[in-house]
Structure formats: C-alpha cells, structure tokens
Image (cartoon, rainbow, N blue to C red; front, top):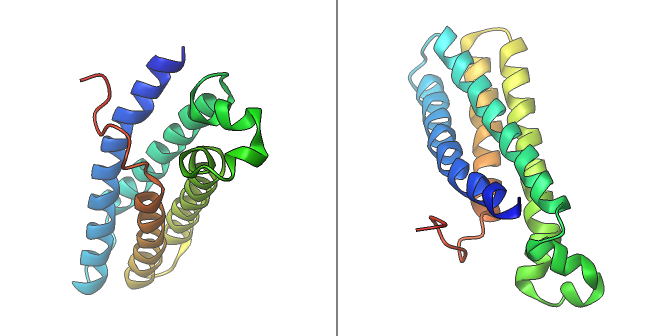
Length: 149
C-alpha cells in the first residue's frame, strides 16, 4: 500500500503546485489590477484549499504506514534528529506542510468572508504567498521529481 500512496502523493504534488502558482498569481493580479472579485476567484481559492487537504490526507496515511523514511525515523527518534533526511521526513516536512495548509484554509476563508474585492484579494494573496513559500521549502527536492519513471 505504501508505494501506490507514495506515487499518488508524489504526482498530486504537481497538480497542487500548478494550482497554487495559478492561485497566487491570480490573487496578486487581482489586487494589483484592482479587479473585482469574481466567482472564478472564489472557486480557485476553494480548489486550492481542497487539493492541499487531499494531499494532507494522503500524506498522513503515508506518515502512519510502517514503511518509508518516517517509519524508519520513528524507530529511534533521537538518532533520527541527527540525520537530515530522517528529521525532515519525521518533523520538518509534516509540520511545515500542516502550517502551510492551515494558511491556505485561513486565507481562503477570510477572503470569502471579507468585504470588498481589494480586501479579498489582499487576504488571499498574502496567505497564499506565505503558504507557497512554506510548501516550496517543505518539498523534498532531493527525492525523484517523478517517481516510478
């Protein structure tokens, strides 16, 4: 079960990255261009939040399975903290991703509830940008970019 879930998590990340970058650019473009918030803006914010949530669920399943780097790290947490890849898999990746996902949800929710297009775009742009920076910092770039190829 570990390998199919890892492949799904790995490939879904590219959809998340594409939607994330589109959402960030669209929110900044709306703010800078003084556009009116549209139904499409709200939809892209919801889709972004939904995709990161699905990715989180898959990641939590992977984290809990008795295979992979996190499972190896859990065998001796003290020793794992001294090994960069194990510490990253056990603590850094999940923690930063959960924070990033929370920021996406907060930004999406606050933008939806805000009054005025400028405020909606500003909230979404700021929260989505911070989340994007955290997500990019949390991707294990040393792992294969396209698993199974």
